[in-house]
Image (cartoon, rainbow, N blue to C red; front, side):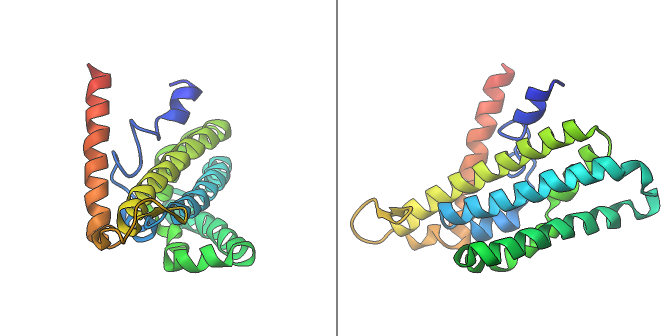
Length: 196
């Protein structure tokens, strides 16, 4: 697989949420608006890329018996950095993301990429993989947030789309599952057409 395929696989073919079905907790929890989705996605992308770099560098020095706990410690260090930076420079977003920010530590996407990719590949390939998967995750959160904010609040980025209120169900968890379900169907159709 060349580096371009490595980078773009997270957008559609191996999208963490819509194909691999990972990361549903933060996707449902924070994607009530575009800003929240982008904030969580970019935070997760930073953690993913940085932890992939470190794990790819130290993979040969970690004994198999403590591999997963070691990965979690590396990931937790970068999550702590992101959380402190966000608390200092974007306190409103930090408050909106709440508990979902520290839960990046146990996000299956990040731990899965550390185990499945970074621990078996070079540093450069791990950076490309982390960026691609992270941007795919961010794109998914932004699209889900755009749909939920638009239909649920009747606005987008604070601008009113239509008079009156939106359908509250889209702001709640059932609306998140509904939106993601339809997006999964669309992505499956795209993948099947590409295979033909």
